[in-house]
Image 1 (cartoon, rainbow, N blue to C red):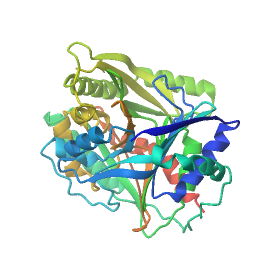
Image 2: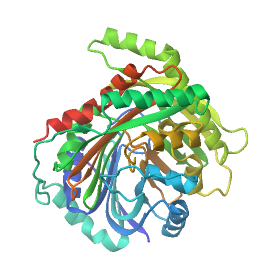
Image 3: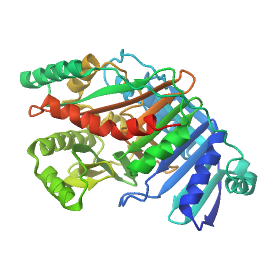
Length: 433
């Protein structure tokens, strides 16, 4: 189906974005992606909203990538959605049998009736032709906030740990034993924090989380009664023409209260041998993953262990790029690299088996990816970290955090890093009204 395009200029883009997201709450299906004007040289737009499903695909992990390939090819339009971590079971002979309190589908994509692309003060509106007559009315409604949105009630939040501190140290020692035996070099070990019998206002929680984090890959996703509220700083994979880039994050340092101390922390992180080793191991894994789809000799590291600064933390980020062989389907590029190395470890299959053995929770959407495909087959996906997941029907709230464990890991320091990464999610949940 064809789309009708309309371009408008907006005086206050921050006000328009806020109204737009509030207007979107009336729809059962919505995806909002926001770069928060973080200076990302690889971004095509500042923010995008896609709402109201015209067609969709929802799947368990079984043959999920083949189903997505067929859907993406046949739709030949923009599709937005996510890939859950447990699609690993479609790529390799693996299982996911841990506890799941959220019950998101493993894969979900939809063809939106209505899309709004925002770049600086310009909004490009793309509606499927059958719904183009609604543009004028929708713009009028967007500029009258509050008419479509009833705020859900909230109740007091009590956060629980799925793995308590002593057990965390025991599990970390098990990971270190695997490393010393040579089973793995590195593994991303995660733990869940959760709330039962709890209700929140998803939009308000997202806005508060976004305000204190201002990440380049923020996401508000609504799938009927299920929500992802994400302050992700990490890009998983982007395809633009015949070029693909991946930007794994590994290496974390806290922010300081003064500029002088911050500069010292940045310098220390750049030189930290453990943090650099974490990052370089994943860079090697990503290079190997990309080589399956890449033109021979085209995989290169554009940035190695560069420090990027966010509101809560400093991070080491590397950028790896390649040229893709002709006639490779875009979904196959993702399948060749999924799940992302920064959330598994190396070697990848061994790391994923150890994750399943030692973690207490099915990852589900956490450490999966949210993003979109364009009609040309280009795509851009984030890594779902620093995120709150919420099942409103089950009144279950969850956020998970983790870190890369290597031979040089000190359990106490790894635990501190988890608490640092969890800080923003904990803060917005406990301060919700």
